[in-house]
Length: 112
Image 1 (tube, helix red, strand yellow):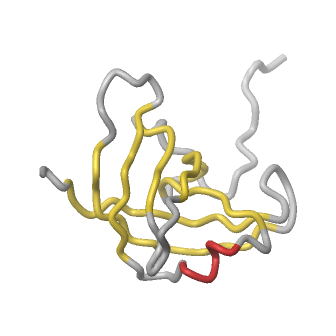
Image 2: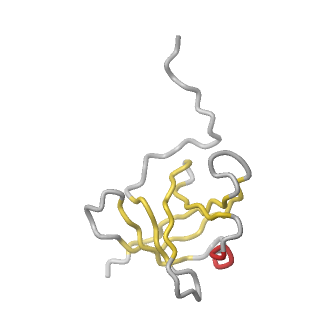
Image 3: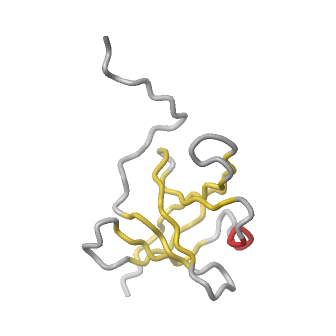
């Protein structure tokens, strides 16, 4: 009897990020948004946005946003990076049903 499980994902999960959540101000918006980060595949991290959320109007593939990344263990202050929105993917089923997955790629570290 085998104790291993078959991987059913289309893409393999990558090791967990050091970051737990992200905070940013969408274009022309005075309110900050904060989202939990998910590491769901080899394509990198993403955050979830519920269908109908107003923040979706401000997010577009290719946008580069200054974002503050928070660690899950609170041992360090949040770090600011520029991140590019790589994809906005609708999810109709499964764990993230009725949400958009917003894929991110960190571009650089803001050392200020």
